[in-house]
Image 1 (cartoon, rainbow, N blue to C red):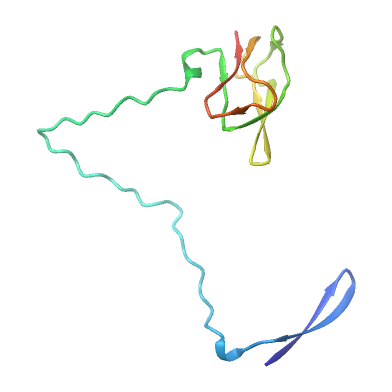
Image 2 (tube, rainbow, N blue to C red):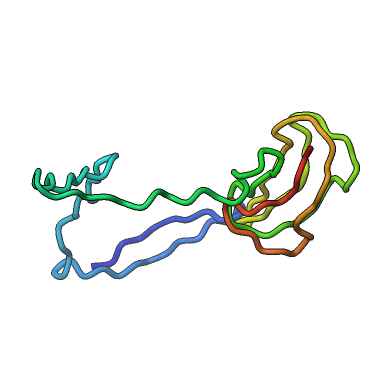
Length: 135
């Protein structure tokens, strides 16, 4: 069976004939339905006689020093907008990271003076890696 369509592209009208095979047509399939949240899997409780301990999660190195500004995500340093010795105010842009072709601005969490810059443009960084130190 042939179907005729009229298509307009940039103001030009085209007539298109499309051959279809109705014998091979399958009924339309409804798209899958996904729940908004994954199911929560709760492991069974440990027997009362056993003691289960898990290691404490290790904190990023940046958490040890409150002046360190950690990377909020994994990416590549694009620009560094401050230099050592420069005074900054809370919310001031410090540097730009690029991840998945999107730029993310990293701002000063508090006012102070930039005492160290731990990265340079082009460096790849992981989440939590120290970027700058503000004292």
